[in-house]
Length: 138
Image (tube, rainbow, N blue to C red):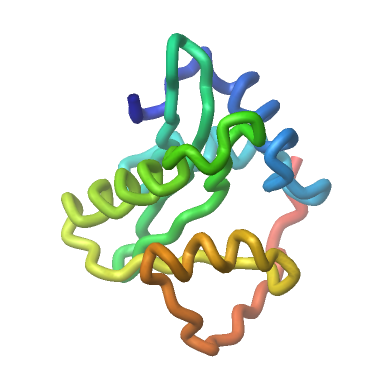
């Protein structure tokens, strides 16, 4: 079952992000969760089975394009279609809001995940992503 994240899921979601290797030391997962859930432009989808969080997908839109972050599936449950189902749910969430493009960021050394997204029809646009941290956070 895929559903929207609930308040009581935060601890399991953070643990999953660490186990799946999608968290980074410079990102505060609790802050990212709170920010994604504070308004109507983003959400966190959760794949759940028998009360256990198996996967997540943070999806949002910026008024022009959709973005996906934190697609993660528990390593013990990978290669069973959960990632594909979460991406389909993210695409549906965006389509329901009238968003027709979905983008995501992928680290160049993550070949296994690159193959996954290739199979789902995602293509490298050869765009360069630039970043500036404008506020250090709490």
